[in-house]
Figure (spheres, helix red, strand yellow):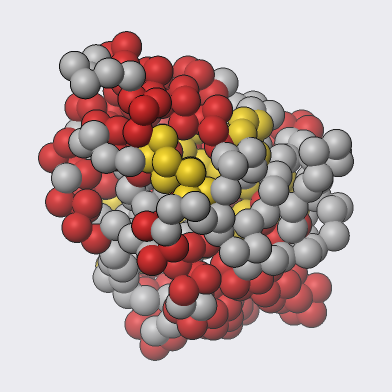
Length: 351
Ligand code: DAU
């Protein structure tokens, strides 16, 4: 296949790019406008492959997108470009509406016209995969069953509302125009190249530097953790086998409370690089909670596992160990990014 992928220099996008070039025969055009969370280094290991190319184009730039599609002639589009950090969306929602909602609209519009210009088998086989989040389903109480493909939408942050809006646009394009699109909704990812504003990389790096580990509220909120390389594998299966109009809820059945995650990272670092000053748990600091903080996310991935013949390979302990080791071995990747990390005012506010 010839796959045009958006957001391929970001965290999840770059894992998909590396997976495709290393494990398939597909050709790839990566469209990434290189925001703060993107880095050429994330794809450096495959960048010289003749099946890979990158164009620095924004998904809001319809004219350039149109040319890229016409010249590359993709068989499929994987749409991963998005603003993704909930705290940033609380402090500055505008960028989320612009990229996630308007950008997705602009990509859909150009993609539909391109698809309309195709004929025969190439038109029938064309697919558009929109990669989204489980946060669109709102949040769960402790005893509620996990989210599935049929859970009603109830987004509660500017970020999740913008992703929900983009999901609705994609489904409307399928329903109204017959555009061959489908959607994946996925739980929290973690792993190599995760930008150090998200919980896991932030805690690893702060702990290594002897800084405080900010835990929002009481640390009781629960997230369901999927190793990013398992997610990449699921998305490639989805683009190869996904059915237009379908939804696939992707997760690894690995729910953990935030405080459990932070303690596990501390224990791993204490084992791998002991700190003469004492156990890292001493650095844990309970800070003011995130406004509107969703309590629990969890996905039941049964449908995706069956339809995509996929299952996550890593449990949380195995994936976290790999992740911590990767950060220990890649200081040159994350040290320059420390300057750009998000440090919203709320993070400093101790309880
Ligand atoms: O569920 C999928 C979503 O997971 C994705 O759609 C989002 O793009 C991704 O950012 C992630 O959202 P979260 O808000 O769950 O991820 P984050 O790493 O920001 O936070 C994870 C949990 O840890 C959450 O309950 C908030 C908490 N937290 C986060 C940070 C950054 C802390 O306690 N301290 C922190 O410093």
